[in-house]
Image (cartoon, rainbow, N blue to C red):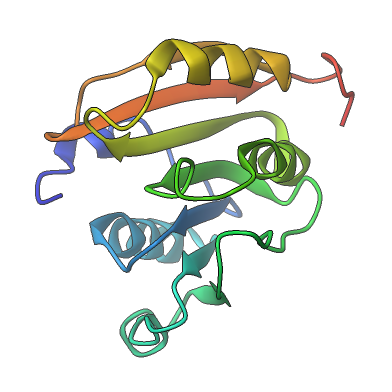
Length: 164
């Protein structure tokens, strides 16, 4: 993931925003989000599903980092605390995709976006869009802006479905 110029255009960081990135390794998105949140006085939370990836603590000094040791466990986050949730290379690796979507829904503010990114060919785009709709995310769309990756974005709408 070297060219994130198009990806950056999906975001409009505002003062006080909170972004959450859930992934399996320290990546360019983490550095992009840390800088974006620093520039606007926001907060960036990073969840890394890898017990051996502790270098993130040293490389991202302004980021709240949570390490999760296995793909059966949930990540921790507060309700309605985030304006964006990005799930990269974790959705298909995690044993409970439904739990991941429920947690993302709970932690997102109203009208906030979820973005799921997986290597090309890993994700069944139609099935993921249907699952997002089932868990009350609206307008799921596939966007081809990162070389070698599939990306789906959807929105949590206020008082639709779960009402959180």
